[in-house]
Image 1 (tube, rainbow, N blue to C red):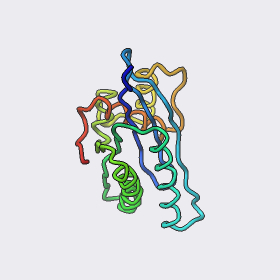
Image 2: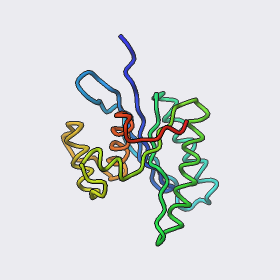
Image 3: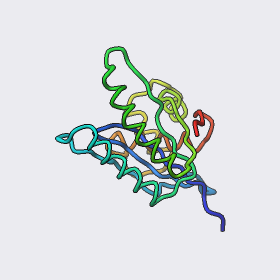
Length: 166
């Protein structure tokens, strides 16, 4: 039997990073693992980034995805610090994938939302519900970081709403 195509979706953040691992099956996508990596807010930035790198590296070593789908960096003029912090987290995540030769797909959040809900500006609740329905989950994925990672993985597995960057 052939190994199923495995996608890891990551919703990057410094405090909370959502992740999801999906396998393509003949009847749809199967959730292999999903959760969050958390860093200790009392620590300095370099230590938190090292903590995130260890967690993501462990995840990638355990699940050995064929592709890693990650939310594309965005910036809002009202919150430039958020983009900078997210950029640090994404850099660590991309480095962990690059060290392992894992293909990376960069996905704009609006494309992920549109792929799942038909609306590129859908609310978090609508994305959670769409993920639940698409994957046939009994409960809405919580916290929203997990739902976002599942959505990113679904879109990355579909292979049509991302830009391959590695």
